[in-house]
Length: 435
Ligand SMILES: C[S@@+](CC[C@H](N)C(=O)[O-])C[C@H]1O[C@@H](n2cnc3c(N)ncnc32)[C@H](O)[C@@H]1O
Image 1 (cartoon, rainbow, N blue to C red):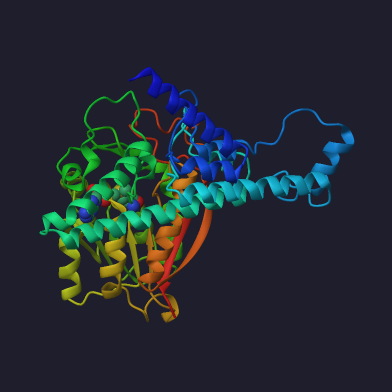
Image 2: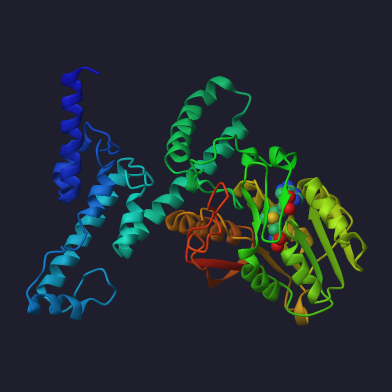
């Protein structure tokens, strides 16, 4: 690179980062006329968004006793804003200026999920510093970006065939996808466990990046995990508490009809069986899982119907036959979020009995909520997206938080390619028809 150009760009980057860190809106506005908001500091990886948030880190320098007690006294939510003091007022103004800076950067096209050298997005820093209001700005930006991406993808599908008209749109999609996909692996909208960053230890190709590839790869079963040929955790025993509570909420009485998509280790199906359902349909597509099901007697259990094949092929036939259920659970693997969305948007309406369930209170639908679960901000973004999509599809959703122990500390990820869960709380969704 031309050294003169390098110096100019570096100067530009530093000026932007400085203006962002000082929440200096006029200077920032001026700089953004000619510079991109997505510059990154070569050493720290900071973008202007990182700088704007990191500058709000409370000063660690020791304060006089009276000063610190004033701050602590007024600090009701841990963000350092003491409501009864001048210092608190100043802090409030600082956070407000930071929020304005972040909004200005977003208006100018700043990317919400660039990673710095510590592997943190600006939202991760806001969360770590306990800056809730700023964190929410990043969650909202993530939701907007993901919605735009999915709309553009739909638009691209509709536009297929008219090459010249689509060219510009294709370029836009590529730019967004490149930044989204390469910057944060954990933000991918997969419905199941294959969402985390690949561990460097595993150099072989990942067989479970697509559903068809996964379905033709051999699986390994053990007491505590089901693993694919690339060492991805398809299902793990630590999820048992989540399955137990899901089953309890979906099937609160005996003699009900249940449909489960994805047998895996059979954990939730065993729990469903313990409430003696009147009928229990299971859709499973992987030949190794189906072989295991045969060995374990699932084909011979009374009331159990095993449907061999992908749900995409099985479900339309079930609907045509008029099958109805009081409870439906969906937990597949190596599928993107749009598969889950397609399932509840297109099919649940034809399968779930609105007058079914315990005491006729209405059928219930649940799913494994693991999208983006290797990073809190991604989990929160997808939580909002799924809520919006479910609402649009005609569902009410009730969330229940379940504590998840430290899986890293418990050694759960040893020998697993991707630690697909890194959070302390699972948000369990139970959906029913609106009204
Ligand atoms: C995460 S596991 C399910 C775990 C299960 N909830 C349990 O309690 O053990 C996902 C299962 O979905 C199956 N699967 C993946 N894609 C599928 C598809 N398109 N149709 C049907 N089953 C699928 C996988 O083979 C796997 O058995």
